[in-house]
Image (cartoon, rainbow, N blue to C red):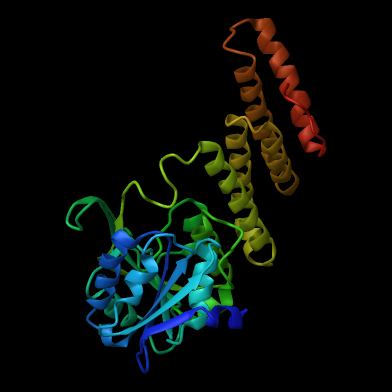
Length: 349
């Protein structure tokens, strides 16, 4: 694998002993990418920053734009790969990282000039801290046009595992990690094209990562119509990806003897929720399968399954207020819930 990656590497600028590596996956972002690289080159510790850009098969002028940046304070390496998704791009960059600290930055976002130095300074020499987060803001157009700000609420650390399971996350580019925790966590999940950052951070939590927080706004996340998950993305696709993400999380948790007893029921509730969302988008068979799996692992969800199936049957039978129709729907839902609990399939049609 390493030989395949190395054959596509172009070292544009070299740095002798980098303190931190910034891994930037990109895909067709030539128009915005320059500002992102400028924000990296403007770091107060820029002379000790190694930037690895991984072009994920762009069809625009991204490769040419990066290759032309021969002047700058830190190291710059370009990896050109076929289109394999953001996780594969981050894994390719991580394989070449040489510094003790690593961060992942999306190719349209910006960082404050002192972001890397402030976060790196919060790592104790003892190695007891594995990652350092910061506050962040969402902007549109110019960096000063802030739409909303996200803060940690005064906590000393951001507990990755429970927060991500509850849907409270920090974006790519927020945290700085010790390279050792990246190795313990394992590769980014390349089968996931969305929610892959949530899945990787949950795996990091299972690996026992300990964090610390810097209470300053140091990351600026761009909001625009060209995001990877566009506004035209179908709801069904988003729901399907979420189901795959939750199943990946459950496999990760079940592989750890300590994490599963603590967080397994919470993950099963999320799997049940994914099943309900599938029902609402018309993916009835898939929704029932996910709910059945949730019930098998967490039997207390059986009541929720019956309720969700009843609601779906009523939706499919129309908005009739007839008692006879309601009773028929209830009997049908109860039958289907029994089938789900027994591991059998039942049709809504």
